[in-house]
Length: 238
Image (tube, rainbow, N blue to C red):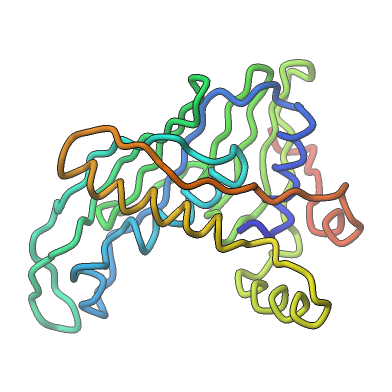
């Protein structure tokens, strides 16, 4: 996600203060669940590790490291049909987690193999002076919407180039060739993993749990020509 022109444009708006101080945020990603591969429903699987990981990565990348998590998580559909057979679900398929970033900045993530359809932004960031929302899923973003109180209208920027989610392979190879560190870091991945593991623990215990790991979120230079070619302002959409 962090490689996409949409993500990086949103980061720049937030970093420049275009929506003021970030106060609260929301992420959502789910569907009715896989009907293949029983491992999705075995220990170590579940909707958080398959789907919620995207929202947690995006929100922590845009806002920063989380300090605490509290969640409700469980198995809503105890039996599924997978590869033509009935299987017992052994991993949580329905989760709602609340992230505390400190200074009363909070975010919520909704994820599950319990969602048929929805029509809403995948990521919403609410600031003291505006709002920015990601269109489509954050692993396959289609642009973003920006509201600024000073402008008094929605501005829609569509990703006309449709950034490919496989771009991480290109980025990694280029980093190896050039001897530079990738944008995506092990520290960020570890932080996200701790959040997801403690989401499961919080769901079992009902307790808010501290997040002990931290990381430095990726930063980006000013908009480049390739990004501008991707993201096109559509004045006809409000």
